[in-house]
Image (cartoon, rainbow, N blue to C red; front, side, top):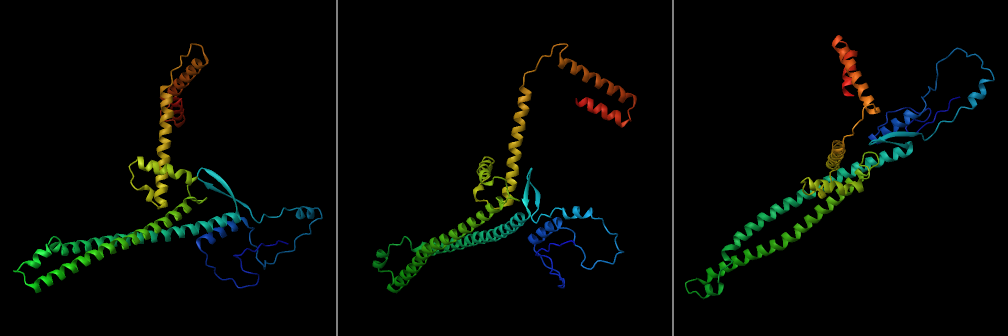
Length: 317
């Protein structure tokens, strides 16, 4: 009798089946579980002709069948390495990765919104400050004592002008304190949002499935590489896609320098004089004979693929 291991995604026996909506994480995990589970057997099999009775010798073999692993191993590529995960552990990692991705998206939106709000406030307060200074400018350098003693100035006019000057000064002083306070709040909100985006970015890039290997140790090297390459403000970048591209550029640059150094060593390596009759001399003579034979065969059969291949390979050697 075959026992079916019913998982959490299978309906209980006898219950009506209905479509189940799964998110991307559960669907992927369910696909992995389904690939490891035994094929489902219909509860009402079709009628079959009576099977011949089996001998007692087959019974011990059926009893000795190994039990199926409830938590099988799953091998997944991680860069150039292959890592082995337990199915339950893998499902947990997938769920955590989904949470990290959601956290990063929310943090990135909050950071962008806070930065945009800060920029709008700075632009608005700059314009208001400019207008307030222009309004107060005519009264800034007036000698009020001299004007008050001037007999040609009407007292009512002087009183009105002095009131206008005081109102303009109050507006300027209010904006000065308001600008400093509000802009400081906006800057703090933008910085807090950037910090949250940075945390979410770090969580995604340290993810064991889709992150950068040894990211905490690699990040300072990426910052140094970006600065040497002329990238400004790299320490403020919280986009994991940008950091992945930077990491690829860093690996390419490092690999290119390593290859160039190895090539330079080969170029600068002193030539070795091979004496006649030595093993190296005999090998060179053998390779030369092989090349001559391949070229001779190619001249005789210029359209023969085997002759063309043999000549090409001999030329490489």
